[in-house]
Amino acid sequence: MSEEIKREISVLFSRDGRVLDIFVGKNEDLWLSGSPETRLTKNYYSRQRIVKTSFGNNIAERDILLLKKFRLDSLVVIYGQEKKRRVTAVMRTPPGSNEPLQFFELDKKVPKCSFSELIESYEEELSRFREEKRLDTSGKKAVIVGCGNETECDIRYYLDELSALLGTLNIHTAASVWQKKAPENAYLVGKGKLTEIRELGEIYGCDMLVFFNTLSPVQKRNIEDETGFQIFDRNQIILDIFAKRAKSNEGKLQVELAYLKYQLPRLTEKDAGLSRLVGGFRTKGPGETKLEVMKRNYRERISKLNRRMEDIRKRRNFLREKRKASHIPLVAIVGYTNAGKSTLLNRITKSNVYVEDKLFATLDTTTRKYTFPDGKSVLFSDTVGFIKNLPGELKNAFMATFEEILESDLILNVADISSADIHNHIEAVEEILSEMCADHIPRILVLNKADRINILETNLKRSDGIIISARTGSGIDHLMQRIREYLPHCNADPF
Image (cartoon, rainbow, N blue to C red):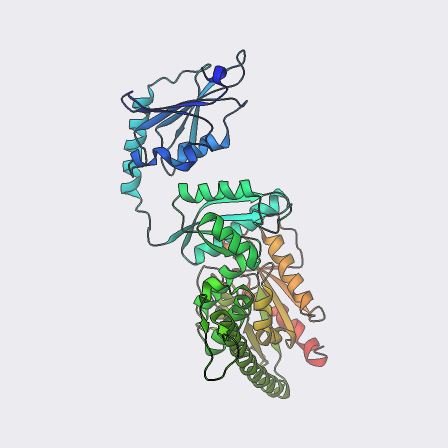
């Protein structure tokens, strides 16, 4: 019948075999409009199944989305030409399974047990899973999206890092999508891919879409209107983390300045309303819109914060001059975020700086004094963690903090040796230091967190790096000895 009318036919069955409905047409014409959704329960399985025809040579991705969206017990697809026709059944496995989907080629291999028995066993496993692992429902869920002609290795690195950033804000990554093409002006990704992303967000019950690429105001507004989700990009997520982590007055000022500079070009009428503030007696024109007033307030606040940041910069310069007069060298501890910089500072100086195993756990610059056994003193300064493609607003706002690095006599580049992306992390830090014109300052590569790996099995080939564990204290004596060797040279000619 399907071949005669040249249309796909889908039959909706209950678990006991009753025909509930018959649909004619493609998925995008019927299923994704949500026609049968009112019949379904909120359980993991809907107790319904679909048998459908398809004119493709394989199971389409939209068929899989159909299975997930309506939480079907199973989906049976008949596809291919008449002489090469195939029948495949697809089932979802319970959460936590190694394979999220299970495929059965019915024309080649028949399952040993019936689908009813199999689905009942899955439901029992799901009940145990829910009892054993109570999921945290307080956090939000997001689909992360990226676009660009990147290598598979870079795509994995970018998506993993963005997922880790979201985890810092207690946001769970439900799914990730990357489109390998040049970004588009209107929606960043293609219109069809955006529809697929919206469907994924609906399937997993997500609250937001988070993009790796920096979105223009027009792109953000278009995607918001098209999908109905909250839209964020990577820069905004990093700004939110900084706002959450800033503790000192200086740190809060820097984060607020970066946030205002980021938001100013992205203000829209939707944020401010459409009404105008009408002028008073004998005024000409209808007055300013709320958007214009809001933009003016943002600019005034930015100017005020810039003046306060200039005062902070002057105070820091005054303290540096006093330090130089005392001839105490400064060692700046830099590195990728969550590399263990604060833990290293605590280990060396016996201090109690806040540490946590999360990205950007500390933002405020902390300086502590250390005295060598020979009586020579040195200052260690823990700086804000670096990240690849650090937003420009943050670079400008934290320039007063970064100046500590430019005035240092020695730089410790701390990297996490247990990370699979250690080479990318080291390269990212070196690029940022080069952008800051800090190439002239001598540095020591410190490979931290050695307690997490087997040193003999690591493939890191860097003979100039010092392997330590700031948590256990392993290798710290060797590091301090290397630092002491650098200090006479730095004192004689710091620059």
